[in-house]
Length: 580
Image 1: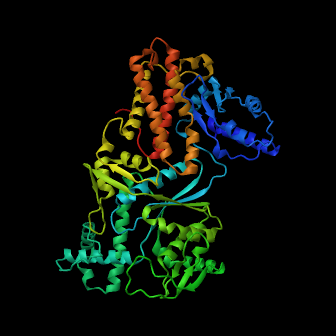
Image 2: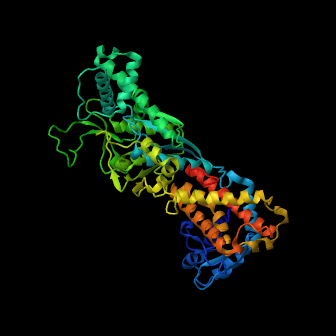
Image 3: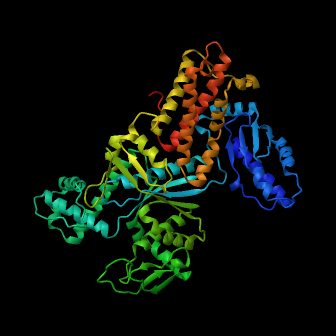
C-alpha cells in the first residue's frame, strides 16, 4: 500500500525494530499504535501515540528518543514537519504537494483505487448461508448472506483468491421429512385425504412444487414403493428449493462459485479417509456419551459408539463420530466436508454461521486443528439475530409453523440497498433491529439515503462544472499555492478520503465490514457539512466562475470523493445514484 497511514506505520515499525536490535527498546507491538486525525489543522494533519508508547519501553532511559524521532522523520519525503509537545503525541504535517498528488492518483486509478495487489495472495474459502433446503430463504439467513458476500468482496480487493461456497445439507432426517411433506401436498392436490404431521413442513411453497410434479407425472407416484417415492420427492424438493434460493439471493446480487452437497460427501470416500487420519492420530476411540443435560429422554440409554477426542483440543466434551448402528453422525459428515475443503488446498477457511451454531464451533475448530495442525486455519464468524420491525411491531417467524418471512417479501418492501447496507453496518456479534419503515425513509437519519445523497450531490457539482466547460487542473501545472484554496474542513475530508486504502486493508484483516459503513457515514457527513456551509458563505462554494483555479481545486477533491464513495459502495453492494 502507498497511502500515508500505511507509510507511517511501516516507518514506525522499522524504526522501533532498529531500536530493539540496538538494545535501546525492550519490545514493540504495532497493534498498539494509533494514528488519528486532528480537528485543529494548526496542530497538524494527524497525530500518533508512537512516542508515548516507545518512551515507556526504553531500556536506555537516558536515550533522547524525542530528538531521534524528529531526526528520523526527515527521511520521509511526504512529511513537511512534526512536533512533539508535552502531551507526548506526535503531531504530523504532510507536504501540500504530496496530498495534491495523491488526489490526482485517485483520479488516475478510479475504480482500482484502494485495491491491493498482494504478492502473497491467499486462496480462501468463504462458506456462508448454507441454509437447509427445506423452504425459501428467509430473514434469519439474510445477515450471513450479505456478510459473506461483502467479506468476499473485501478479500478480493485486497489481492486474495476467493471461492464463495454454499454447503447443501441434503442428507439426514430433515430431508426425509421434507420429502414426506411434499408427497402429502402432492396427494392433497390429487384430492386424497391425508393430514400433515406436527413435525412436517406445512408451507404453501410445497404446494407449488407439488403442482409442478403433477404437471409432469400426473398421479404416477401414488402407486410406487415407499423407498422409491421418498427418494424422488426429497430430491425433487431439494432441487426446486435450491433453485428458488439461488433466485432469491440473486435479488441481492449474491451468487456462489460452488455448491457442495452433503449427499455427495456421504457417497464419496472422504469420510473414510478422514476417519483413518483421526484414528492414526489416536483421536478416535470407542466409548459412551453422557446423557444430554436438561433433556427428559425416557428411552435414552448409553451406547458404545466411536467418539472423536475433541476435548483434547478446543472442546469441553468428546463428540460422536460414528453411531452404534454403524452410521456416520451429522458431525462426521460435516467434518468430512471441512476435510474436503482442506484437501482442495485452501490457505484459509472462513465459515459464517448463525448464533444458534455457537456451540458447534469448538468441535469443528478441534477437527480442523487435527487435520491442518493450524489453529488459525478455520475462522468462524457468528451472526446474531435480526429482528424485523414493521409498524412498531416485532415480526415473529417459524418455518415449521409456516409464518416465516422470506427474503423476497422483505426485498419487495425495502429493496436491495437497505438490506445489504444494514446487514453489515453493525458488528456481526451484535443483534440488529431492522425497522422496515425507517430504512426506506429519505432523511439524514437513514445512513443509506444520507451516503447515496452525498454521492448524488458531488455528482451534481461535477456535472455543473462540465456545463460551464470547467475541467480538472493539469497535474504538472500545480504549485503549492493551489493548496491554499482548501478550507480546514476540506483538508480534513481530503485526509479522510486518502485513508481509504488503509481502511480496506484493516477491514480485510479484521473481517469487519461495518468499518466501511462507518467510514462512508463519516465521509458523507463531512461532505454534507461543507455543502451546507457553502449556502451561507460564498467563499466555501465549490464553483466560482470568476476564479478558475479555485474551482479546479474544489473539483479535484470532489471527484476523488466520488470515486472513493463509489468504490466503497461497490464493496457493500449498493448503487451510486447520480441524482436523487
